[in-house]
Length: 336
Figure 1 (cartoon, rainbow, N blue to C red):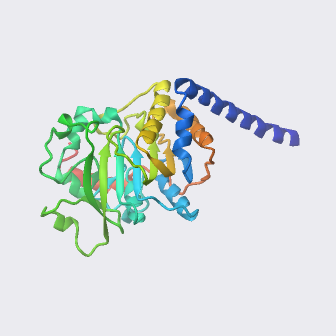
Figure 2 (spheres, rainbow, N blue to C red):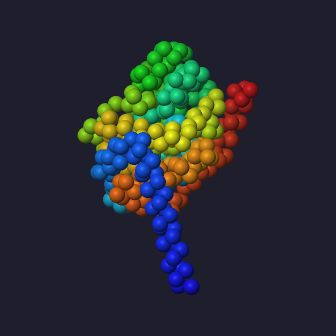
């Protein structure tokens, strides 16, 4: 019995090593620099974590603080979704879900004042989404919706992102967030409705929110960053995305997608203090789950660091708490 107990873990360990080695040689064959890119990216990273659901990035942040690691002032999120809600009191309704975890992140850590949402090139070039990104329907904004452009500025033309897509020019907005509730709204100087959105007796801080692609992401030389990578940035099932937008990649496309991210990180001089990588199984095509898990293992193994967090208090939660918002949508005739 004792021999069996010893042999089984050994077999599991050897299998894991073989899997990681297979990925190692596969990626090395495709791009001999991938190992150097990962090591360069993570050489000063103080915490690296591979998790399942994107709101577990909040667990990563909490673990970092408990470990004496400061949360940087900049959050960069590679993701098909913004994971940010406009005009919705996230914290008031409990711990944030995968759809709005960034609200809680921005509200909880006072030093965080910049957010960069890096969307896939395919999403930035998709015309129905380009048009939607310029939509300024205040009925949607005032009752709570996920951040997707939806500016309060009246000079944003409907075809703005068709003529100048985010692959050519980044889009920056100024937001104010209630640090008690996580309620986030764009601040537009001189706009009358801002007086109702931002009462003076609330605890606020300002946030610069930039939406871009890997090409229009600015340079971060000398700056500390919390880097979040969602696997659905590379391959997306189309679940819960506008216009049913999806990206479906081949296994080689998945590998190249991660290589491109690390090339971008190097080119933009991003040196993450904290790196959080998320599987997002509801949003990632099922056939890619195992491959992405192995790539995460490869990245951590190559970095020479450990995946220290073993348990999470957060998990994917179907946003039932948003039902009240959807009811309002119906009342306004917006669900037809």
